[in-house]
Length: 287
Image 1 (tube, helix red, strand yellow):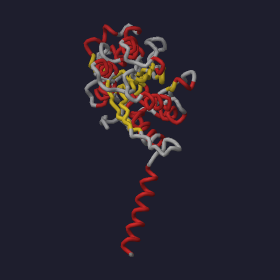
Image 2 (spheres, rainbow, N blue to C red):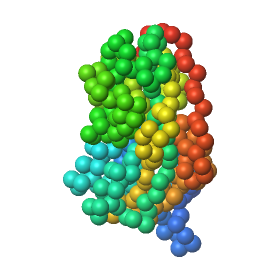
Image 3 (cartoon, rainbow, N blue to C red):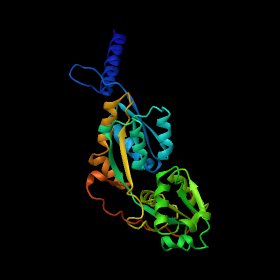
Image 4 (cartoon, rainbow, N blue to C red):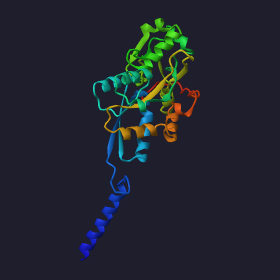
């Protein structure tokens, strides 16, 4: 009799615990199925989206986010070749437009999510005080994204052309396949300076890499930096993908983007990003 009572109690406890983990969809008692959304996003978004991933799990526990990062151009090629992507966030309008032109984007979901700024950074001790100094002989190597492959490279090239520096820096260029490679080249000493996003400098001050901010790209020297977002036309989970895309425009997500140095466009006009304080001069170490 005592053994039966124990089994009954244990069964009741297990049932209660299991019941607490069920996310009911409605009064009919049907549980929501677990879903996995594949989100492909520009490499510059990796720190912010890692935080957002954990936050969204608390909001929608039945949805698991699978994050795929890379240069916008490389991610575009993956999608064109049939990669099963539910949501795409590009670092430029051109890449998203190419996917839209191929009929791979749900046009009703496409919008500009974020903005960013372009900055020049250098290793401590490099004699850089302004953008024009990249032409000085003391600057041996300048890291930028590959202009033929990645948006940050196209923005960098446009700025250098605008400043009449493009020809002078040609022999010095170290080309990265995404903005993280550009930043790493400067941090590791494989380049004296680099052109990255302001959000990357903000992240660098949180994990000090010993970089010095030289300055912002002059106004009008490159096309506006925007991050468009869209649900893919071939997603098998359109409702869940749209829900997450919409959540990225809500206050909680916007505040996280701001923390990582981005400007959410839904907040209205973009305000200048505060300049990070340069770290003390020391040998950079990548973290």
